[in-house]
Image 1 (spheres, rainbow, N blue to C red):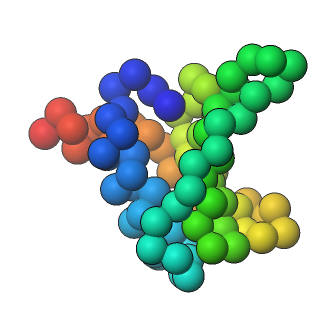
Image 2: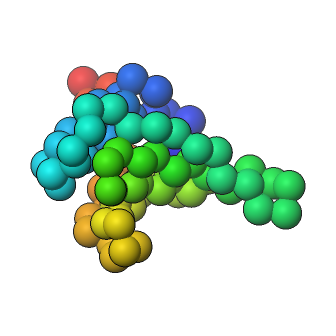
Image 3: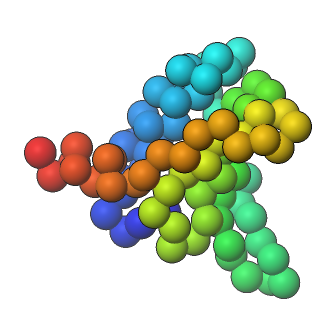
Length: 84
């Protein structure tokens, strides 16, 4: 997650996109991703859908239950809304 992205704006972006993609649940659950004892990002699950935000990344990637990429959303969108 970028430093300019707040938790509330990220939550709104996740909820909006999960809803657009047809998620069956109201709010996502968050998991911290660690590889070789280092933080690498966050995974959000909402029903059978998931979103991944890698550390330092500028996009959120949304996947279906089979792992197929459905959509990528730039975090710049969120940062622009905060600045406005």
